[in-house]
Length: 222
Image (tube, rainbow, N blue to C red; front, side):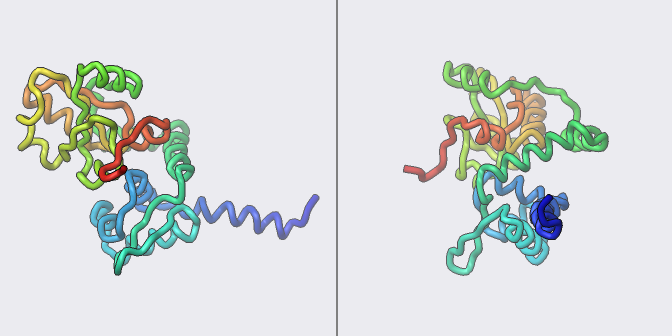
């Protein structure tokens, strides 16, 4: 039957991962790190946290083995411990969406109405290859630099209203952002529609694109 004390220790070790995931803000930090490595201060700003709170959450994730660090001078940079952590995060969301009643109304309230056409990853690849669409990355510039869809233009959502004229007027735009629960692409498509532009949204986003093993371009990569 095995030693019950050792069995309990094993399951307690598993539970430490679950405990690390039991905070909305820690999940948000994982979502940000799924886009690429970042220093603590940048993570704190992006998640709307002060440095002390962000550092505490990141230490919890590190102790659970979900993130790793490297030092650059006085700055500590965090990154996911592996692609399996990104996959775990994506699966957690999928399970919650399928089995927890509170998720769908919360999702709809945050993302807004489903008022734009979506395209899938394979459709986007085919249409981009044929020059039918402009692929638009509306994440912050540092996330674009950390990894983006080949051929995508970077116009962060905060800058889009002032840069619409940079986009070809006669070509449909496919906007994307961090993932299936990211609001940036939704807001970008609504803005483009209000300016009379043809625009659709990539169903899902960069997290799912990477997990599917599709090509990613990193700025400065050889």
